[in-house]
Image (cartoon, rainbow, N blue to C red; front, side):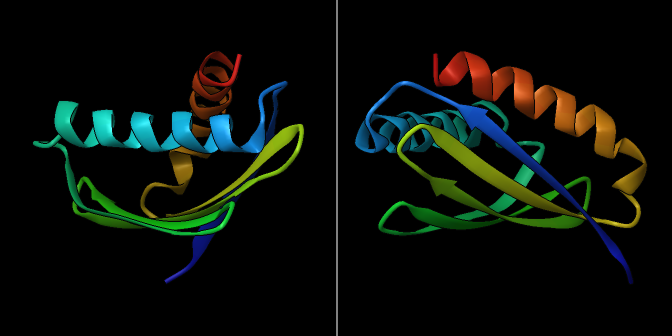
Length: 102
C-alpha cells in the first residue's frame, strides 16, 4: 500500500530545548485527551530528532520531527486511506505548530 508524506516547517524563536519540551508536553497531553481515538502512540527521541508512530481510525501513521535552531521540520507518512485528508492535516498541523512554538 502507498503512503503520502506531508512535510512542513514551523519557524520559532525558542531554544531547541524549549521547542523540544513543548512538543513533548503537547504529545503527552494529546495521548491523555484523545486516548479513545489514538492508539499505540509511540515516540522515540534521539537528541533533537523524534520518530513517532500512532494508530488513528485503525490506520498506522508514522513520522519524523527535527528540532533545529529556528525551525521545526516535520514529516508525516499517511497511509493511502488517510491521504485524501493530507491537505487538511497539513493545515491543521501548521496552525497548531505555529501556536505551540510562538
